[in-house]
Length: 47
Image 1 (cartoon, rainbow, N blue to C red):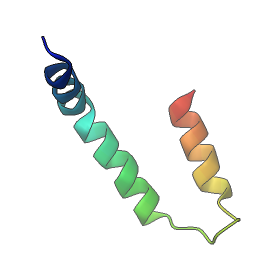
Image 2 (image 1 turned 90 degrees about the vertical axis):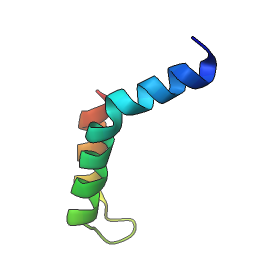
Image 3 (image 1 turned 135 degrees about the vertical axis):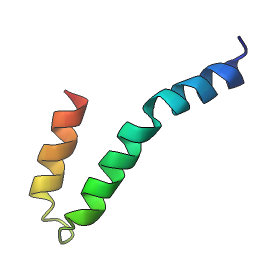
């Protein structure tokens, strides 16, 4: 499997999750330098 194929497979595997994260962040906007909920959400996803 080439590198490009591996990247495409990874993207297909995680596409729905990444779209869900984007939709959550866009549905819950916060003001600049006051992104407390966003920070907690992203930290939870990275943990």
